Length: 93
Image 1: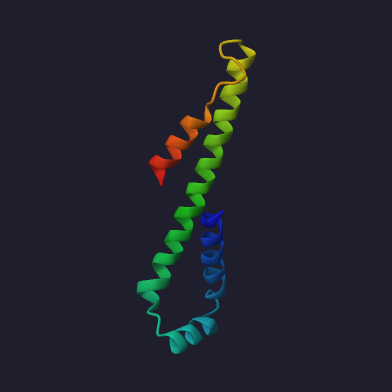
Image 2 (image 1 turned 90 degrees about the vertical axis):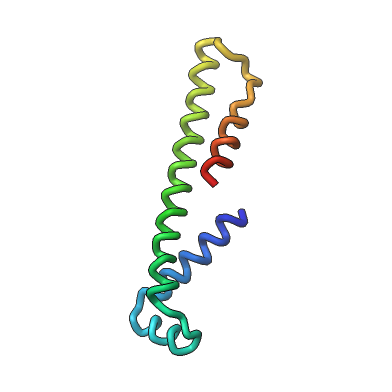
């Protein structure tokens, strides 16, 4: 939830500064160097978006794998595949 809030705030800032006039206001009011702050921010937003997308795909893959193995009667219903999911998320974060 905290990760989503930070990403949402970053995305809001990114959308707000797209307008040239707003960039000039931000530069004038807050003395932000566009090349040092705003450009890396765009790449951070892109990275966070791609990371969330990949994690959601992996989560769906784990759920499908669990359903497939359960239908093949190779595992019981109570197996905990979320440990694999959590360890993978820790690796990427």
